[in-house]
Length: 208
Image (tube, rainbow, N blue to C red):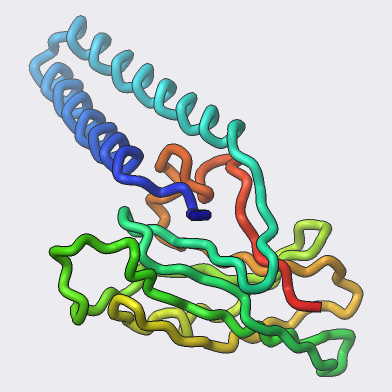
């Protein structure tokens, strides 16, 4: 299974780091108010050292990553702790709209992968996805965003649907691929997530 890198351990590390940061910040404020300079210095150094260590772990995870370009029909699971929702490119078409622009319409298939749920989970309970970001990227790294509105539909296990997403791209752009990822800002701070600093991403090849 190809995912965006989110997993329960990384989420727990992130939550633990945030709670620890708040605790150390509280100790620092208490030390400053009560004029305990030694405790204030110790807590500030602990905060900065912990932040630096966490950043190192993010960078290690990013440098160890590798990008992928998925063939049409191949799936990428976007995780919200559990990796239930699978995305793939089903079709694509292009038409000139004048002004040196081409409108590309990409048909994306969204599927609730029922093999990822436990036996205790209801098979009629819907799942609403978190925020998504979609864009076409060319071989020079230029991004051409589209609207993710069609990706907000709730799904129940085993259900799927397709939606068309339109992008307007300069005619000279080449090597277009689809970027489809989680758009929650906190994912940039989760170790191993494709949204984290310098992490390589999985993109989708468009049908020829």
